[in-house]
Length: 262
Figure (cartoon, rainbow, N blue to C red):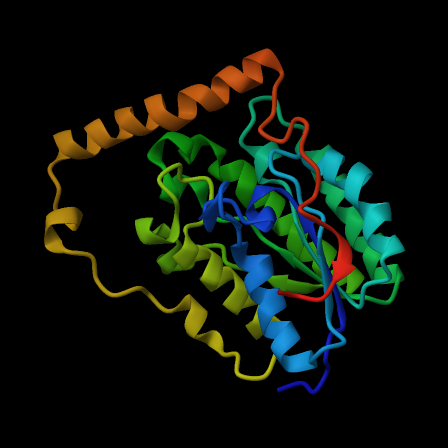
């Protein structure tokens, strides 16, 4: 394990990094970045500081424009960057522009001397059958992320194709955001990628088997679940797109300043 202690951690991204579905609006969202910050704080002691600039609903261009300079101004020694999924699941997405925005962020953070962590995106087609048409786009984007990580010396958390990610317990009912279990797994994956004390590869282990009544559900019940999901989550998402609205409209970062973790 590395003996490096990170003292100034800044998280950059969208709703996953903000921590949606690991908590709620009333109590506040925790999320994988907060969980990772807790681990870093325990290792580093009272000098540790943490900021989370992520805002739900933000596309890669908005993350680049609104969070890059703010993050650099905080002079972090560790930056995590998770971006792109909000773009790639939209019809007409310009994947080249998304990749360029992510590449620019990684380049800027790497040039600052910070340790930078980024991520490939999960197999959305394995998570939701209705999203299978986006799979080739995500696969191609992930290839570019791997190349960027190599080019900029970025620490890469590559989860594409890992079987545990298709387990419904990893995801919230909306299938877009991680569940508390999923957020814990992401935090553990980053800790492992950074070779932090006490970390290991167990984050990628399969969860205990699901009950047979779930895995052997008849086709009609699975189809009904898809219809319910589409009406509950997909429909409102599409309606926001039609109106040009975002879940992040009017929102700001939850932790815009480097503060002690608590």
